Length: 115
Length: 114
Image: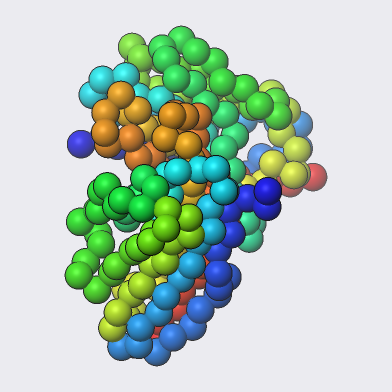
């Protein structure tokens, strides 16, 4: 198992464009989380899935953001009509629901720069 | 709502110095507490955890004790190395609820100089 993979590692986009990120969790993990991290801050929760069901969305997740996990495996996070304020590191993490209190496994993140 | 507060950084120490990074939390119920570490250019890694009061988490020479009476989970290491330079995040979750996502503090940057 190679851990949690995120693609791409870096993305530069022009304001107003749409972007999509992908996360491949550890294969046996049924929970998948998306976080956003801005410079000098801790990760902020965006949303999470248990299998293919999206169980919670943060108020940070505006209507321009959508996340899917169609087959309960990989997940995508799409941002429509990007704004400069969307520039951040987008982190994906996975866990087994039975052992969430044992911590997550994080990917290396996708760094988004909106110019 | 639940929250985590950490001492502000950056913290700069000489090699072999003693490290303390303070962390306090606000949460109802009985949260699980964590320290995560983020090395330059890498994702977050779980460093240690404690799931109930008075538990001590330890890993790689780092320790933290879950103190419910003071709602604290301070990170300590007796002798830091240059390789410990990283950003350290205190975090909590409440697995007894359906809202068991992990909530992170703002992070404390540590630089260890030779």
